[in-house]
Picture (cartoon, rainbow, N blue to C red):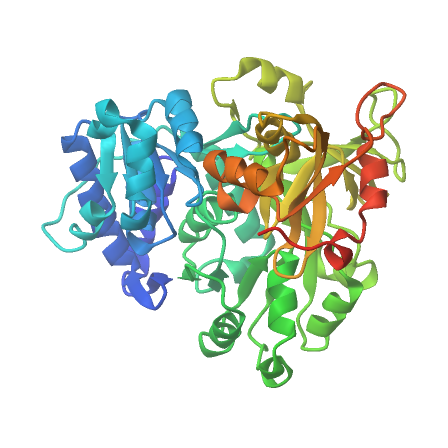
Length: 504
C-alpha cells in the first residue's frame, strides 16, 4: 500500500461500501460506486494514452463527473490542472501553454470558449465530461496503485502580487498528511461525518477538500450553486456536521427568516475564512449553538487551520495555532523570527506545504527560504502560537472566496488606448464581500468606461472585470518611492459602493 488517496479510497470501498461518499445537487453515489466508477474512468484515460505525470485540464462547473475525473486522475497519477469555469479564452490559452495538458475536459456550456482558446490545430486534446458520465455503469476494472506518494497530484492557480498567476503544486503525500492531520485533531470530522461543500474545484476549497474528506470516510454533500435557502435546508435535513465557507455565505444564510428556527444542533465544526469576519456574524451563529472558528491558511500551505473552540470563544479574532504537523512564525523587520506579539510577515512550514510553483523555480526559491514559506500576509502570533491576521501584503481582492490579482486587471486595462495610470482596489459588495474597482487617469477624449469594460470582458473571467470604474482628472497619488499609493486611493474610495454607480 502507499500513502495516497487511491489507497484510502480502496479501504473505504471495502469498509463502508454503502455509505454515501458524494452527493452533488441530490445525485448521490456510495464509496463502492465511486471506487468502481473512478476505476473505469482511470482505465479509459490509460487507454487514451494518459500516463502518470501527464496533465489533465478541466474548465467546468462542479459536477459529479468532474469529481470522478479528479478521483481517477488521483488513482493513475495524472496531474489535475483545474481552471475556473469563468475562464476567458485568453486565460485558457495561457494555461494550456503553461501546462501542456494531454486533455482539456469541459462541460457543454464551456466547450465553445475552450475551442476558441485552443484553435483548430489543438482541438485534438478537447474532451467533454459526458465521457465520464457514460462510464458511471459498466464492467469492473482493477487499477494497480500507480500514484507515487511524492509526486504532484494537482496544481491550483493562485493570484499573487504579480500580474501572472502561479501554479501551486500539491503532492499526494501533502494531501494525505493534511487529511490525516485534520482527522486526528478532529475525530468527529472523520469517518461518519457529513460535510456541506460549496467551493469550486478550481480552488483549494473545492479540490483539496474533496480529496481530504473522501480520504477520511466522510459523506460530502455538494452544491454546484450557492443558494442560501437550499444550503440552510441541507444543513438541517442532512444533519450536516461540518461546514467550511467564506463569510458572505454565512452572512446570507443568517439573514434568512428561516435561520431563527433552523435546527443546527448537528453542526459540530464551523470554519470561516477568506475575508474579514464581523463579530456580529459570529454572535448570530453562536446564538444557534454553532461556534464559527476563524481559520488562516493559503493555497501554498496545503490548506487552512482553524482556531480551537476555546480560542474561538474567548478571542474570536484569532485564527488558531495550526496543526499537529506544521508551525507558524512571524518574520520581524530584520528578517529573523520575531517574539510573540510582534507584527510582521506570517511564515509557515509543515508536511502539507506545496511542492513548489509549477515550472517556476525562481518564484519557488523566493517564497521558500530556510524551510519557511513566506506568505506575504501581515499578522502576529501570541504566546500559545495563535495567529492573528492583520492585513494582506499581497495586493489581492477576495471576491466570494476567490482570489483576484489587482495587477492582472491593471495589466489588461493598461492596454486600452488613452490609459496613462490605473489602480485596481477592492470595493465592498453585498453578495461577494469584495469586488474589483478600477481608478484610471488618462486622456478622457479617448477613454470610455464602456470600452474599458468591453476590453476586460475579452481578456478576463467575468468575476475579475471591475464593477466600478472612475476616470480621474488628476494623476493618481504616489508614494515617495514613486509607486502609486494604494492606501491613499483606498482611503479616498472607502465608500465607493455607497456613492458610485455600478458599471456592470
